[in-house]
Amino acid sequence: MIWQDAVMTVANSIFALSLIPQVYHGFKEKKGFIKPATSVPTFISIYAVAFSFYTLSLFFSSITAAITGTLWLILFIQRQIYPPA
Image (cartoon, rainbow, N blue to C red; front, side):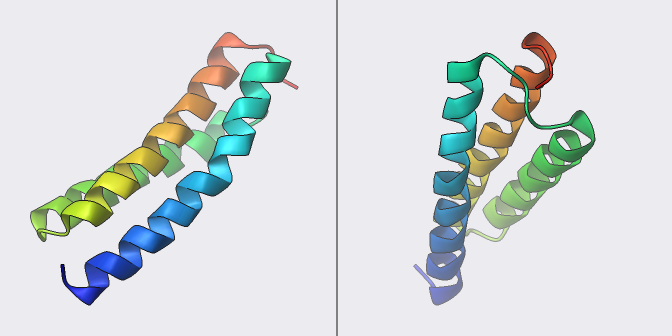
């Protein structure tokens, strides 16, 4: 593992961990708190970054970025299925 992969893995892990309370809160309250104008570009961009990491053989970074993108996708889905806050 090169040092850049380690740094990006840690940073993306922190991003993912910081989103977990928001995702949990949405499920608990049955409300969509995040606007699509925020969540859609964010999850698409993060998936693009994850793919870029993968093509650079930064596998751990790509996995953690994909997890972060998926959490943003869940926030988008919550907004679609639950009433807005």
